[in-house]
Image (cartoon, rainbow, N blue to C red; front, side, top):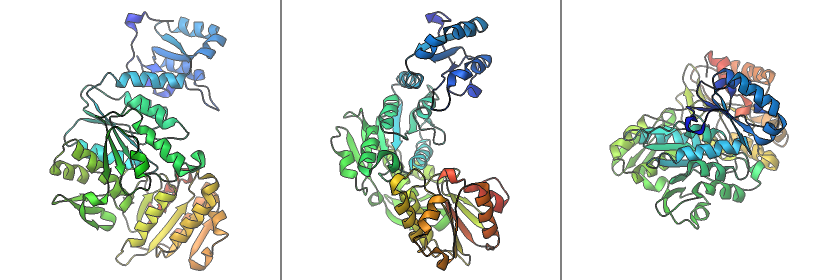
Length: 450
């Protein structure tokens, strides 16, 4: 229904009617609580010229479709079995229009976004690079992201995330990466998949269609390294600290190391960020970048919101609160334990780690126990999971404050505690899942948008 086949075209793709533009395609997604078909009129008013509709919707709402067509005769309506899978199919077909594009897929339990950002910064010293923005890495986010590919792009760096079993395979089919990077196999989403074995199997799907010309980059020190490389017909590169020398922590300034005699500095602190950088270094070397190009790219890396973000002032805040799982929490606490300060005190603000299922209580107990070994002068624990875990530990005896919930009232209580304690020179680490909104504490105490 609409324009003839030889006139069928669209210039953009949107699943949110607010993002629809003239000449674009609108794909209404159907979720548990909302049906995107309700927003078709809004997309049409914004000038969408192609609209996908679910076949079931088209059958039961034929009269409505006719009315939409009569009011927008230039629009083409296409009935599909499932709008989300149609989005993925369209995205996969679009990717195939760029056969010379080096397609890099990045996945893992943690560090995906940071690795993607470092990769893009390094590879941009030689190539024209396209990547997904932020963590737009899901069953819908990845397909939408690949529509940003253009003829001038030489390398695409795309992060692949998951919230359910089978999702990595679905979106890997869209991207069809010829280089794949796994950052680690941890416990993020263990509440969904049930075990690390299942997580490893899921993440390995990033290599779903590899050939002898493809290359898999696998963390050498991960306990699942052998499993991840098992059965692969492609080239395999194991990366890790052994590929460099003279690793030295520069505190909040980052980490320096030596690669083939050249000193390089990553301006992101902590060993977890270094591991992500080493993945990027391995890919860069595989693609033939020079040591100087790698050095320049690493130096240009900038922290993203909530990821090892150092906000300096009379009190320095380390915002590492975009996400959290037991592995990233342990890495952050290890870094904080080893951080040396000149006169100031260490202060910890830890929020709940979400989506851990039956492993949640033990994981939060371990985090609280590890926090006690960081040398923090004050520890503030926020959230229902932290509160439950605290009942088995003697937090009150070592300068700890536990506040249940994650609402504004809880945040205000935490701010009051911190405001009465902090002094010039102190360093505060905020670590927790995104749903805890710990950045609200920084905003209140620092008086600026974090």
